[in-house]
Length: 166
Image (cartoon, rainbow, N blue to C red; front, top):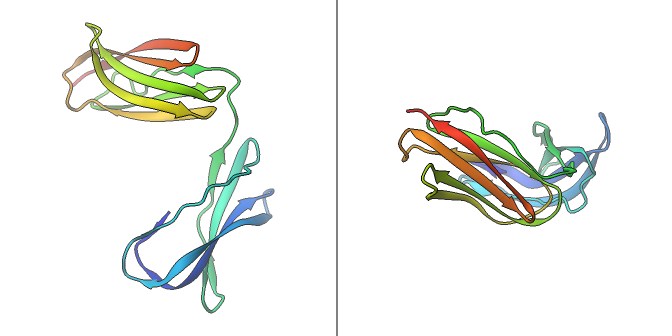
């Protein structure tokens, strides 16, 4: 998360929901006090609960006053199988989303090809933890036509067709 300005900001408490009404503090991040510059913060939950986790920030001032952020939900469900979804929207102009899921940690490549089999772009080329992912593909620099996208994740290989209409 980021702040554009800070006034009297002592620290942030990162909270995770235990149920619908109770939160627990799972981390504390020091604030920057008073600042008119953008400040960036991050926190990694090393012990997430399986399924969906709800998080919020409690921003605490030096005088003890505090405010809560809006709640966000993060899904830690581990997929039971590998899957490559059809891009959406399809046909598209010029952006589309490609979703995929992997059931174990794998080196993943997601590439886009033209109808002649030439690689147009590599969207993913790295090791990924088990989970569900979404990649945005911007084809503004490409011409209208049929393209293919291929996911390779360990033993799993699947190819799907998409249509760019400008």
